[in-house]
Image: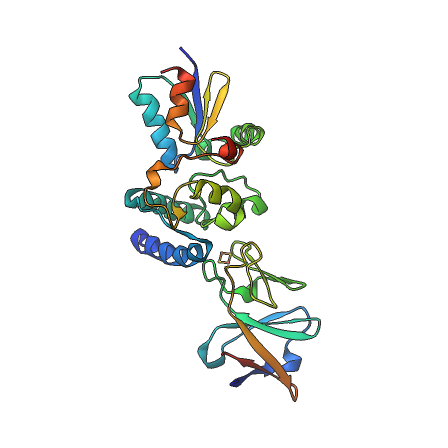
Length: 111
Length: 101
Length: 81
Ligand code: FES
């Protein structure tokens, strides 16, 4: 399938999901395009648009928790850092995503 | 309520799911503990058809990426803000009806 | 000079930024792209990630210290620049 069309389709599906969770697509359009490109590549390879920034463990139960948008499965952490790990989505009130540090769960409370 | 006939009561077995398309709307019917429930037939994630997934108790699991829903409410178990549309059903004279309102 | 190594993904933009950071500061480093590694290497990397409480990449090791995420300030502090 045409990659640009598939990107649009993913954008369409994901927007509806993240909106009620309080998230939106990042305002960094270059980053958004890069990440969606990677997801289309991952989808072509595995049949599933996995997160481009988290490891596939080849264990279904774990791997299904990093299918984009993976916010529901990592909500506490992502709410704390106001974005998802790869940065495709940010909290709705975020205007400058570049100022958000990419903190892992263990560092969130003593950043 | 505007009740639309979808299938005969006997056609839906306990613990099973079937798709139906009342006036073209994609609906998933499921029977648990004798009661028939109806929710939208496509997953809220990426629209996979749910009838090919699993039904375990009141939990539907999507065949594509395992998102799970409560068949009684349509709610996505990992984030209640997300879910399937939930439709009313009734059984009468051996027939099952759905209201799309 | 401190020894810098990292685990990354070929698909992850933050991993690219991390590599760029060290390149721009003329600090030599080694890296393994997890997604392109063999099974045994992947499972070794996962053990290290899990032990460190890391859920994603990049995973940077500077001598004995490890830093999870693209965090230039912390890299600078760890290297002493
Ligand atoms: S489409 Fe149902 S879980 Fe992804």
